[in-house]
Amino acid sequence: MRRARAAKLDPAWVYTQLLKLHPPAATGPVSVAFSGGNDSTALLSLLAEVPALHSRLRALHIDHGLHADSRSWARACRAHCRLLQVPLVARRVTVVRAKGQSLEALARSARYGALAAAMRPDLAHYTEALRSVRATLSARNRLRHQGETPD
Image 1 (cartoon, rainbow, N blue to C red):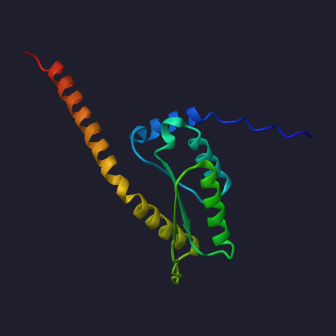
Image 2 (cartoon, one colour):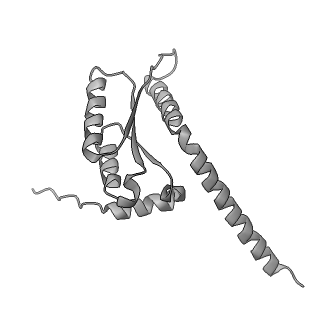
Image 3 (cartoon, one colour):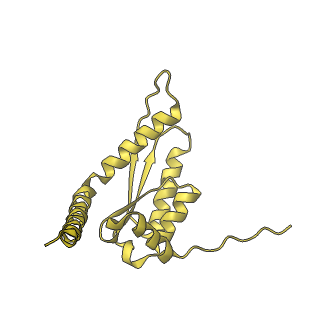
């Protein structure tokens, strides 16, 4: 039995979907959480092909240190980012085991904290973008209400 080949995704289509989900990505920095697994590698590789995005794209790799090969995974991520010419921010976190909590939940919490810290410098851009969106929505609301108000 022959396996069907997966269709190649169009990077421009992926970027369009990103903009629908997150409009500030049209002008601001875009960070991809990059584990080095198939999904994040595919996403980063696709986005790196979008000329309008490439100069604003970066990868964030968080090494939990929970696996003996985690340092080699970080090296593989670094090599892939060099190939794509995408900057990589790599952080190593310490996951402290706590009684009664799953290791996966603790690792996820540490990863999210490290990702948030790495993206903190981007907040100024997104805060300004949100202000602009709010101002536009407020102006539209005022115009709509003016049209509904009898003279």
